[in-house]
Length: 321
Image 1 (tube, helix red, strand yellow):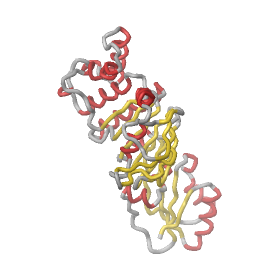
Image 2: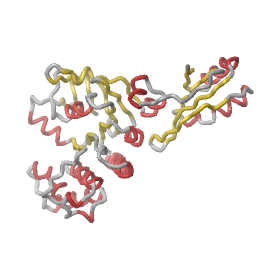
Image 3: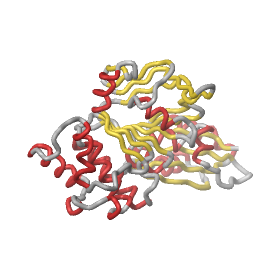
Image 4: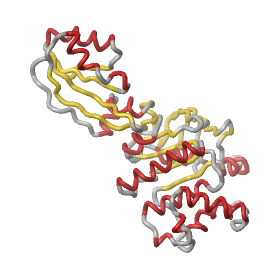
């Protein structure tokens, strides 16, 4: 488990993180989102000890992340693989030797039977067995990121830290990399912490997410809960705009983040015997589940009956102006 308690980080007079607290469970895929400058990447660098922090505490499996104890920090960092936006591959090395690089840093032979077997298996896992002797200049962006993922796994980490790992990739390749990360999480049980500004990344793979703004956590929860019924700051981040609404009647937005709520509109119309209009709606894919919201317009005199019915059925709603 990764635990952050009231973490504060300054660069001189600039406050980058202000009292950040969160818990990432073992084997979880956890997302951190926010605009550029929100403190996301700095937070990730504090987790793996590349940056110090002024106050608070960060622990990984109960061990404090601190630059004061270099030996302990180095052992912690061995447990945390890192994937970057720009891949960070060495051009003079082929795929095999790029993946093997962390072993060399730890004084482990990269040509022993055990190391060869591990490296070849990881290269196969990321789908690059036919590129094992290729140089980075011969690879596409997606293939380079696959090499970086294999390299991050070669020391058998418990945690994988991803800093905007798909930002440089096109949408189709991004989906492939995210599917690979899900596979790694499910098969190897590795905890994955994802920093991103791409909402599709969070929707596709993250089980929980924190929204950072100005170095503070303003919202935390399941992606569908944050995005389907967002607070004002998240709505501004998503750049969402409401559709046109009728001037007459009452406009009510329904939020569906539970499969059991799907038929509620049809059931409500039958039970209450009222006519209403569907104004607009949206559906989104969250980890292969479809959730969304719907705006309906009901007669003024039916408002109390409709809202009472929604409350009874456990459906979240709000009246729109």
